[in-house]
Image 1 (cartoon, rainbow over the protein chains, first blue to last red):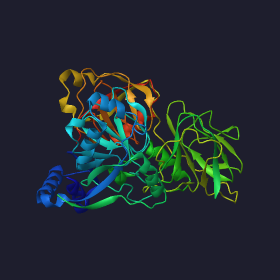
Image 2 (cartoon, rainbow over the protein chains, first blue to last red):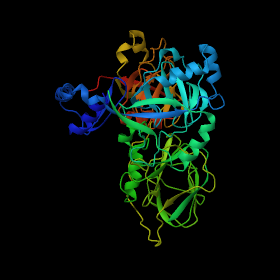
Image 3 (cartoon, each protein chain N blue to C red):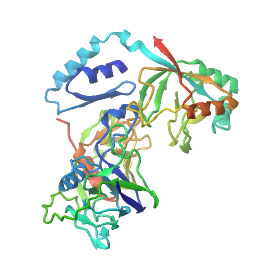
Length: 212
Length: 285
């Protein structure tokens, strides 16, 4: 999907740009479409010409998360309602290899697929006024990180000091659709050191080539 | 660089220039002026290029002080728009002496108004555009936008005015063109018929979206998050209709039942809350 989206943008001269969600591609054309059937045909041709292999080249990112109730206001509630220990929660949340399906909702918000169903919890009936930047949260069957302070209906269960969006950069997010994300747990005592490193730009997100 | 200081602000304002488009793939709102034609029009009167950064405000605008002489054009008339306590004619190049104070008021009918300055406001380009990433509410006395002041006081009088189609002053606005959205087909017959009523614009609105007052009974369930764009009309699970604006999110999980062509989006966005309108739904061709 993600490579198809990139190919649409690169290879079809009539296309202004293309972006995607889970199962839909949004394409903006430079001019009004006069021959819809021809456009449909060229898109289908491009789609069928793509090898499944092309969608497997990606980067795997390792993201530190501090699962601490002082940083995650909904952690205690979450464990209570799920009848789950902290160790269990951390295990379930860090073991999965998540796929970045697309970026949406907020600038730099990654839609991650692949969460263990045991962690699913319906969104809050009334959204919180403020979910802090860096909050690692669960909403329904999804998990994600709030890239900025925002109102939101997800349950905050952890915190990461990693920045997901930098408008000063030409590519403001480091992750792209199709990439993989894995979380690892850090203690609150490690967090302050990490924050200093990040501030001093002395920290690089651990990453590796990923071949599905 | 000379500066236009924001002395005070009552409601939301922002700088708007070209939309972002490509950066929507990072979840960045597309942005750009709500009323493109108005913003472009006043830029042309100043010999600026069409997408030169302008100041956009909703209803009552901010109060500004200019550190150096320049020329401006405002897009709408308001008896509250005053330059050194004198009314400013809309769509006319107006000289602004040094240290002038400009109060930007609300137009009686239109919600969004624009201020263009000769040479444009000098704001930093972020992600390929000079459009604000957020709207300002009150930036306090110290904030400012830079511009290129003029040093020679040559008046250019009798400039031709730029004509605009005036916003509907009628309380009932008919024929807002709309087309079926991807989830329109999931509506039942009664719901489709209900779309033919007069709807009212609620006061819950900003550059991200506008809520419509009348709910639609028996709403549809949420969908898998899918692309959305300005002009999309979403139907929430509680039956609320939301028209998405220029700073809307890039993806959403509510059914997209209608979409409006960009001109119709501007028309609705320029209408004040409480005004009733009716869609004219037709297949896109």
